[in-house]
Length: 489
Image 1 (cartoon, rainbow, N blue to C red):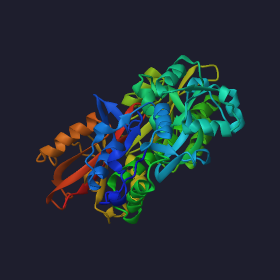
Image 2 (cartoon, rainbow, N blue to C red):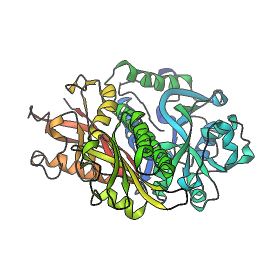
Image 3 (cartoon, helix red, strand yellow):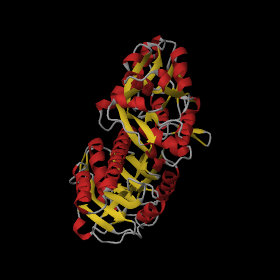
């Protein structure tokens, strides 16, 4: 996963005694949404926004137009062979240690196997990798991981870019794709494939990644980048973009893990059935091992709740929820669904991850729906990064965070009074056209940067200007926008 961390401090490039500076470097990245990607001919993404900002703070007259967007293999090989090139971001492995000069860590992420659910890829230990045809991008870190797990290079299906690998996933000629989980899901979706058909079949490794500089880059230039990166660690509110990307990584990882556990519960219900003690045990185990799941139910083909466990379950059994949008879609399409936030028959608001359940012979039986409470999930993830107290939502940094669904619902805000309001409908927001205009951009673009004016909180109505970055997390085609703001003095 791509999390580029660059200080906002004014750190020079130490150019007094050298002929090479940051302006002389060739900057290379790849199509890696939502962090770096090309849209309408323009390079976008939070990592690109951040790089431009650091150039400005360093007094470097550069902009994103000079960044080269290349297939990973080509960018990697150019950085190996051409002086004064830098590739962002690159996993730092023992096998690569002497190949580059390194600045970081600048990223954290998870390398996984992405596979179609109907492939039933099951890996209990690395030896099981040999059972499957696995695709990967040449020179990607996962190739080394797979080789270190006992595979031979000739066992792998290697390509220069993601597109042919996704084609092979779709036509069934490979079983799995080894890649970063966040970027892989986005690329599959952008290729026009149905991401609901895919799952994370196996986690290969959690890793940190770095800026990789060609070996001939002067040490003083490399040091200036490292000093910029180090400065972010000296002040906990030094860089909101870094915090946003960490929040995104943690949230997407949590959603992916929840999704995988619910998919496994659906598989267990295939043999246990949707009613009785066996079904209750499956639901109980799911809730017991996932603190973010407050309630889980089994649903018949008629859309009625059969068995319910967890918070509010005593009022749920027998209720007809077939008219709820996500349940109707589950029953019609028989594919996994991630719902919008909605009032539940259990008596509180939540979001559902729902999966179909089939018998061992392939007969559609109904489904399972597990409830998460987005505000509580986000509180647990956001608070450690923004250093606020969940009990009273007090903040000790200049940054605030909010989350919005694509219908304009404010799903999370440090100002608790705003949760549940609709940005484009509630009169609270009507006097702030800049906020509404930015809200339209946030809905259209998965990531970006802007500013708007708004009151500090509902109690403090003083209007201030807020610098804003946003990015995206989501499941099964439904996206949440994640927004971090800082009051400009």
